[in-house]
Structure formats: structure tokens, C-alpha cells
Amino acid sequence: MNVRIDDVDRKIMAQMQRDASQSLDEIAKAVGSSKTPVWNRIRKLKDAGVIGQQTVFLDAEALGFEACFFVLIRTSEHEADWQANFLKALRDRPEVQEAHRLAGDIDYILKVRVRNARAYDVFYQALISEVRVHNVTALLSMEEIKSTTMLPL
Image (cartoon, rainbow, N blue to C red):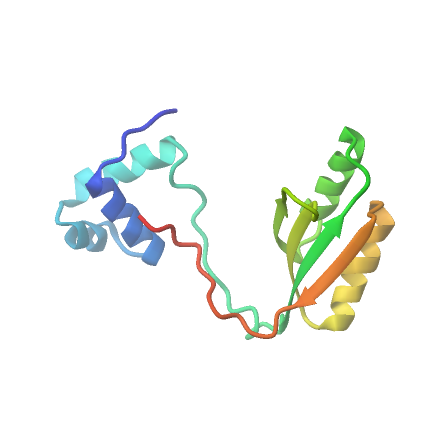
């Protein structure tokens, strides 16, 4: 579905990105509108797929997930069956927070959040037992400097 997005829509989405738990009244006040038009615009954006799942962010470290690894994967396999198995393995693993297929020397990069290095090794051993990969390089993040899901509207 194709939807026209104007400045008011952008303001609404910016407010929702900042804090999706705001009431319609709070969002309407922030964007200089009233509740019903804001609700209609949000519904339009949801129906069009522009606004997706609303969720809550949890503090990984507070919950004991202290290690974040970026995993670089090279493969010599590019057949459809291999890709389907690989994608299933990634989707089945809750440790994988993000997965991207890349252009260039590296085929895939994963963001993997685990409790510690030992937990990463368990993840790694399980992954390579499910799918064949040519080379895996794991990089431990020493410090998260910036992390956001907000788009620059």
C-alpha cells in the first residue's frame, strides 16, 4: 500500500519513536493537533505498514546479557537450500538480535547478545552444527557508544 506522509505524520512518528507509550492526548499536544486526527493518522500509518510492531526496550546488561558480539560470516555455500537452513538457524536463535546479508568480502554480519564468552561459544557451536560456514570471526564489543532504532525523520 502506498501512503502519503506529510509533516504532521512525521511529527507523530517522531513522538512515537521517542516514546510509544505516550497517550494519544500527549502525542496530539506535542504535534499541535487533537486526539481524533492523530488516532486516524496513526491507524493509516499502521495499515500501510509504516508503523510496525510496538515493543519495549529492556536493559540487556541489567538482565545479565553482558556480552555483545558482532559475528562476521563467510560462506562458500550460496544455494537456496543452504540459505533457507541458515536463515532458519538464525531465526530460531534468540541470541541473534540482528542479521544482515552484505555486499563485499563478508557474506553476513550478526549482532549476538549473550551473558558471557562461554555462552557465545555455546551459540557458535550450535550454529556451526546446523549449517556449514567457511569462516567465522567474532568481535566482542567493548563499549556500546550509540544504539538507537530512531530514524532521522
